[in-house]
Every structure is written in structure tokens, then in C-alpha cells.
Amino acid sequence: MRRYCETCVARISFVRVKYLFLTWLTVLVGSWVLYVQYSTYTELCRGHECRNAICDKYRKGIIDGSACSSLCDKETLYMGRCLSTLPNNQVYTGSWGDHDGIIQAPVFDKPTRGTSVEKFREMVFNHLKSKLGEQANLASLVSQILSVADGNRDGRVSLPEARSTWALLQMDEVLLGLLLQDRGHTPRLLGYCGDLYMTERIPYGPLYGLSLPWPLASWVPSGVQRTVDQWFTPSWPRKAKISMGLLELVEDVFHGTYGSFLICDVAAARFGYTDRHELRLTDTRAVVPEDEFRRAMRALRCETDADCVYGTDCRTSCDPSERRCREEPVQPNLAKACGALKDYLLRGAPAAMREELERQLYACMALKGNAGQMNMEHSLILNNLKALLWRQISHTKDS
Image (cartoon, rainbow, N blue to C red; front, side, top):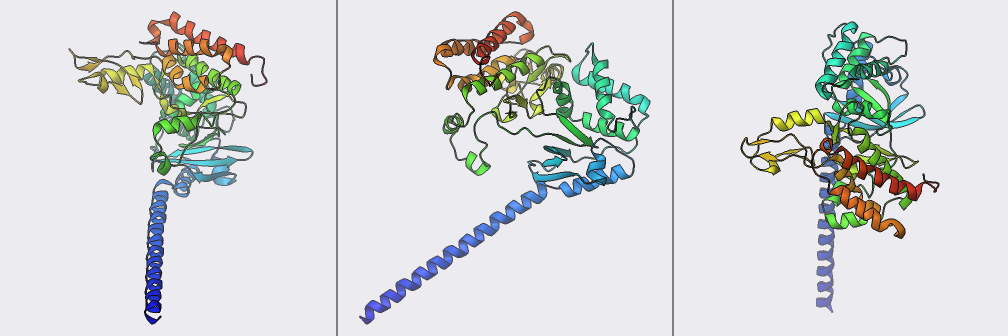
């Protein structure tokens, strides 16, 4: 009996030591995780510091903009949850009166010495020309940007307003957002102050599926992720309406008002949609002017075709004699858009049109070469696909 009690005591002591060790290990690991997360947060998220720097310039009269007074004087523009993934690109949820939005503020200093306002129009014109190439209607685009620059709507652009607008125009995503905004393809610009700007929040994104936290995303196989993604989509008529939005975006950037553009990443994460199931391009960095793309390709040396990639999926071929990348994109925007929509549209498609839809999608995905060289085929496939979708949803409430 005595020996049995001694054994029980020893077993209990072992269990206690085991649980103490596990508790200590849990506290240690938890503390380390919290420390790493806090260190990462403080490195990535410096909203207070960013706001102070911008408001200091505003109060000194260096910059101005439609959001400056609300941000710095009235304090009615609030920065909320931090969404930053890079320390030099501050991103937050935000609220401004009745508007919910996304606030972005790349952390960099612009020269405090400006030029005269009279020179501003010429500066903007030359900047747009360097980005978009020779376009017949650049003057009207300059006028549109000057209207945005007049933040207080007093009919003139002050030097601080001009400096702020100039800082924004250096960011390609802002410039391209302004170019596409009239067609409703991008989130609306709500206001700006210096190099901080706020756009409307798009409630649903990505285009389909779930945005998993990075620890889970790295463990879930891509095949499983694609299958799960299809479970988290709207009803088919609503998917068709969202898809129509992507096709219209492709149509508008193909020989659009201000030249041709290439969409160099058509991943679902780059797109979202509104409560009315209208598509929005939430990351305009995926879009690049064709002139800029061609210049970049001309300067790129290569050994194989694999070396001739711009962004995620804008590709050309390698010229083996010159060992330089050719300028012509291998695949047009429309083919890439159809590839992104194939599984999205075919799942749950009405049986009466599924076969025809699949045939048209595969014909679209087979398009090769620069769309500018095959205007007729490109337009025919695009119009047929839009017409097919529209016939199916035009009589529904989702249209």
C-alpha cells in the first residue's frame, strides 16, 4: 500500500511538472507571437506620425487639399484599422462624415519649393504625355485634373493645392484611378491632403472566395483553395453582372479615351464589387499604359521567353538574335479576363446556355497577340460574350 502511494505521488508530481512546463512553453510562445505582431504593427503602421507630418505641412501653407481641413482642423476625418503591408505605404480604413473609405498615404517628402501656378498646367501636361504617350485629348484630361486640384472649389488652384496634386500624380495608381473613374471602374476619390488621399470603400472583395489570413493561406493547397472559393460567391445572375463589369473594363482600356492599357494582374484579389454587384478595380497598380509597357520591354534583356514578363502576367517573347524582349504582348487583356472568369461563370450556369458559354469562353481564352492587331476578332468575341450574358440576366432583378 505504501509503495502504491509513493507511485501515485510520483505520478502526480510528473503530471504537475508536465503541465507547468506546457504552461510555461505556451506563455513563452504566446509572448513571442505578441511581440512579433506588435513589432510588425509598429513598423508598418505609423498613422499618427504620418498625420502629424502632413498637418505640419498644411499649417505651414506648403500643401492644401479638399481633406486637409477635416483631417487637421476639424478632426472629422478619422484613420481606423491599419491595413498596411509595406512601411512606406500607409493604408487604413477611414471615415469622413457619412463616408466610409480607404485612406492611403505613401510616406515620402516632396520638395517644399514649388513652381508658379501658371506653370502647373504645363507640368501636368508633360507628365501625362510621358506616361500615356501622344494622345489627342490630353488637354481635356489636364482640365479634369485641375478641377480635382481645386479642393476648396473657389475656381482657382492655389500653389499649396498644386503641390498636393503634383505629389498625387507621381503615384501611378492615383493617376490611373482618375483615368478610369468616369466609367465607374475604380473606387471614387473622396478627398486628399498632400500625398494622403481617401477613396470610397468597396464592401465586397476579393472578386470571389475568401481572403484567408497569411498563416492559413500558406497551408491550404491551391487546388483546395480554388474549390472552397467557388462556395463563397453570389448567385449566378449576380456573378454574370459582375463579370459584365470586368468585360466592360477590358473594353474601356482597349483603345480607350486616353490610349490603350494592359491589365497585368487579373487575380480575383485585384477586384471587388458593390452592394449593387458592380465591379470595381480595387488595385489600379495592376493596370499599365501600353506605351510604358513597350518601353520597359524594349529595355529588357533576355535569354528565354520566361525573362520577358512585366508585373504578374503581361508577357512578350524573346528575340534570340537581339537577346531583347519584343514589344508585342503575347496575350490580350480579354483572353486573361476570360481565363479568370471561366470557373467563376461556369459553376452554376443555367443548363440552357452552359455549352454556348463554355464555347465562347474557350474561344476568348485562345486569343493571342496584341489586341490592336486583331480589332475585329477581339470585338466580335467581346460583344458576343456580353450579349450572351445580358440575354440571360436582362429580365432579372439583378440586371
